[in-house]
Length: 453
Image (cartoon, rainbow, N blue to C red):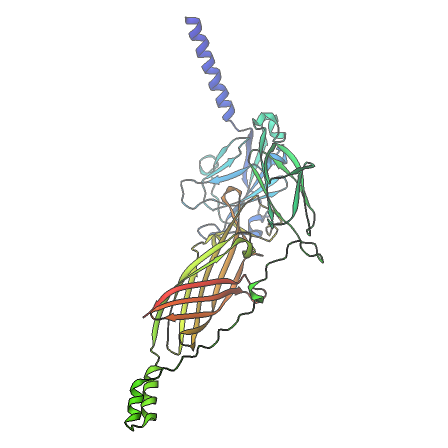
């Protein structure tokens, strides 16, 4: 009995030792120091944090760690301090540049395969991170597995998902991975390096390589049309080119007034009575109005590979001539607080392409002032101008968001449409677009329901 107890205790002890060993990171932090004044990385690449302060840059140098595993590092700082976080991460050859808020006390290095490490800046190094500081953090592999690719069995990970977001989605394309044609855009593959190519009718060949590691990989593929060749599917006719047919003027039928006929029989001057009656009949009362507006742009028409909506109010007053103020939004502000910007191909100003998840976020804000004129009772024409914002942002891994400058547009909002008064009830319809005077955004169909009082 005593022998079995000893063997059980020994087994438990060995399991605990294995657990502790498994939790230890497979790399060591061998250096944390402020770089020389000649290193102006932070000053030449400035960025503001959530408090509007200039960030510091941590240059994380990885020695003897494979490029595949380097991509898996991510970072956090001061979890207990609200809004202090890593603002940006950029891969620079064997270095990873990380923009952080000044004054942080903890810098957490994380990796799904190699493990985690917490750098206690104040406690262990008695240092203070100042704005526009540049610091060097040196990591050295402490395990042979850190120098291998992520397909190494030491990581305990054999397969992971590889997916593709091909834009435009309705293109006639064929997807090949490692020479094999895929009939879906997402599959489980073995960890390691994979080559891919996309052949699409009317578009240039798109090919590349990607290393699949500890986390799913989702590749954004923006197809580029071949110049001089028509696309296989005709583009929808834009609203800018549609002919707007002005409504015919409504002619009110004249109703024979029996009272006038009786007065004519009594030899009363008909001209005076007719003028008075017609004046009363055509008298236009001044009205105020409030309209609830809505916009919905479907995915196939929005040009940003996703549908979006917005809602708002329009308030004004009219007699023969009038005015209105219109406000509209979808309530999103992702583009105003993005972590950086990118172009239509997903490249940042530093020439890097973040790992985008395929999720697209849209901000729509519009404020306009305009005029209303009566065409023919009960129909009115409205024309307005103001300022509009249409931000298009792409989501990336690690919770980051990048504002796509090529798809976004900010500038003058212009609107034209009609307003129909049916007693105290109002129906409105208008077309709205945004322009920065170098290009026009999508034309949005805006409809509204309201009342006059």
